[in-house]
Amino acid sequence: MKDYLFVRVPLRREMMTTVRLTTGGVCSAAGMSYDGGEDCKVCVTESLLLLMRRGFSAAEVRFFAAEDGGLKVRVEGTEGAADLPASDEDEIALALLNALAADVAMDKAGDAVTAIAFAFGQQA
Amino acid sequence: MNEEELFRAYRETHDVALRNQIVEKYLYIAAVLAKKFVGRGVDYDDLYQVASLALIKGVDRFDERKGLKFSTFITPTITGEIKNYFRDRSRLVHLPRKVSELRVGIKRASEEFLAEQGRKPTAKELAQKLGVSEEEVIRSSDAGGVVSLDTPVDRDEGGMSLHDVLPADSDVFERFEDRDALEAALRSLTQQERALVKYRFGQELSQMETAKKLGVSQMNVSRMERRILQKLRETMKKAMVE
Image (cartoon, rainbow over all chains, first blue to last red):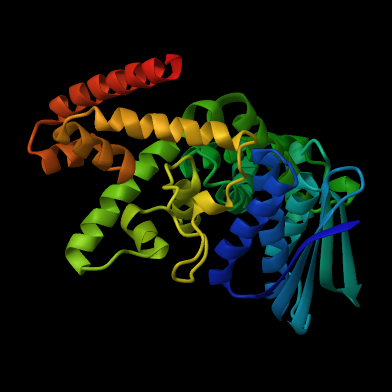
């Protein structure tokens, strides 16, 4: 799998625009459609917000070119700790990720989510 | 009543008052999801309406006996409806117009801000002034604008321009010939016509701005521009034949 781009981001709301624009650029470079790129932006933002709500203060976003021509993304909390309880918002965020992306997977420490991975196929 | 009891009661009675109670309880999900899709060329109110209708339909289809939480069930349903709405109706018509309107708004707001504050606004300040998100401002300023070939691509003084880094055409000599022919053709223009070319195509001023510089009307600039282009075309064609 080719590593497209790697971003380390402090988990603050004002950073979300930068991450969304970066994601849009990567999706465009990966040949995804406008809608696919917009969906990917939502997924990346949701993942970061989810980690932020759980108590992380920084995260890494990695974009990979998938072997089938699509895009794989992994968002991982790096600083702080996943020590806050899950909320209704988290429930919606996870359902939204599953609705928009494929192969949604999570790493957990106990009950707490520490990383989220998802993919967009070539047709996205 | 908790979620399970509420849905069980509604499934057994089909009481409209109960359905309304459920819809009101979960309407926030429609609002949350509608917000996630703002900025794709459809107003929030329209998205909220689509999401709310999907929620109402979803209440009738939800079966609490399957052990799923309602939010987990309804989120993909609402998301699907919103995406169908995008696909069916909105983007082809609204997005280009919306983006081009925003671009005009950004230009105007920038000029106003500069006049008021004596400096250029940031994307955030423009977003506040226009009532849109910062991301929309940045994206629309990237969309389809005219960029000068002299635009620097790095911050170093004397660094490379966009022209320097663009891939060269395979036939470089042909481009040299074109430039020679163009320079010769420009010499055939009057002083005022050359000034117009400089303002319109060198400095990329609008017809209105060019008109002010030349002290003529915008209509005059438009007519002169057509005449000049025709003249240049003919002169260059003649030079190539010779």
